View 1 (cartoon, rainbow, N blue to C red):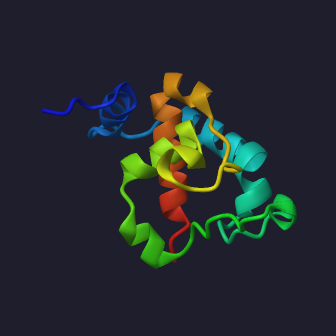
View 2: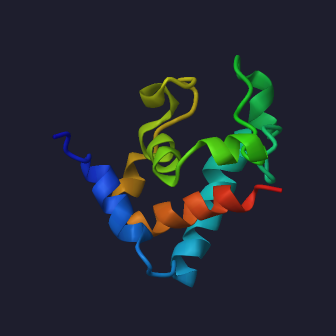
Length: 117
């Protein structure tokens, strides 16, 4: 039997039926603005100013087909481990500090999910 990764266990605990706190959402909004929007754009269209210099265009997070094709666990893994870990572009940086903040990680996943049209 395959064991769940510690990240997935932390994420599952964070996801539970517990609502994400306003504090975690606020911290996630700051992280989104500071780390994510530069490439993904403020609305997840892959059109941030940093996207212009990347060899591979950032994921359009607002794409409903992509949203339907991925799990919350996948999104959390890409956020914390970086793109290369799941076969995506290595320019999608890892954010390992968020492993210690499962509530903020959950809020970031919810932020990505909120970009869906």
